[in-house]
Length: 228
Image (cartoon, rainbow, N blue to C red):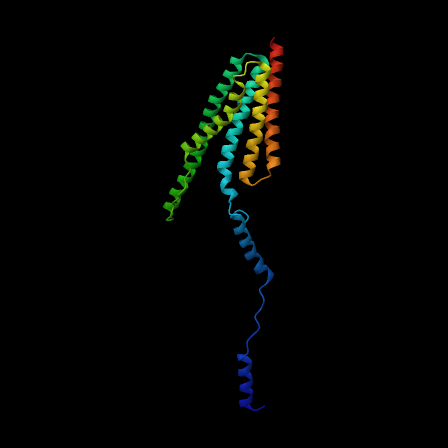
């Protein structure tokens, strides 16, 4: 072949477009996973971030549920050994006040410990030349107030429902009915706001509350029979 013809052939070959290689599957999968994870973080496509709700939802539902179960169990337990209306009312009121104070103090101490840890971390980052700035620091006072308020709101339901009924049987029935409705409502509300199963959550909270009230009644009833 002549030298000039060979050079033209090589030039044409080099100028021809080369086929693009397909990306490997292991290079595609991580990108797809990242996109799916980002979409899931937004709330499974419906624009609701349920993870962002988890912290305050847990505190609110847990506080209200604790208040309801504590006061209802106290009133039923005291009623097992003392059928006087005043005794059940005082027991319920004492449970409301002491429980709200206990929840507030416990939440204050817990959140303040978290606050101290985050502040110390910010100072270490600043010492290392980093930004060391955080916008949303936890508020111990707000957490304590919210926890106490949630407990008191839950505790008020059995207290108001049965504390002023004249007959002993009527008081017990009123406390049990109001507490059952409140427990089921708290469970359903928490599941709805958290995007979980409404039936399972409501049943779980309801059965747990019944178990606590029945245990308190049984133990104090047995204690009253032994001390009589």
